[in-house]
Length: 67
Image 1 (cartoon, helix red, strand yellow):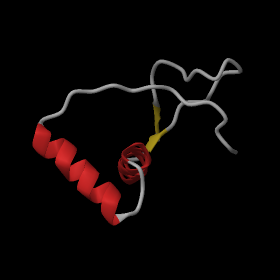
Image 2 (tube, one colour):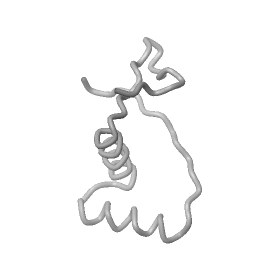
Image 3 (tube, helix red, strand yellow):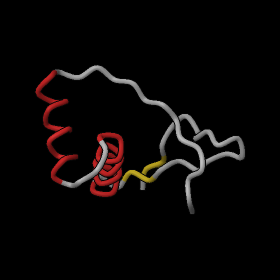
Image 4 (cartoon, one colour):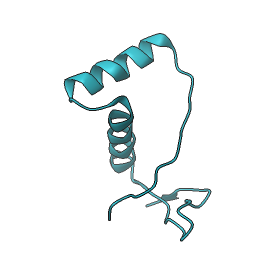
């Protein structure tokens, strides 16, 4: 299923973490946002964290479900 709307996430990280994320994105030829999405989804998959169902409004439930 294609995602038609996106949400903004803002976070402060140390400069070395931002540099590492930017370097990973460059190696993968992705934007920083795309690289972050890949990393988060990979982490969730590796740790058995399933995304919460999306309501009709496009917003997710407050708590993510676990396997």
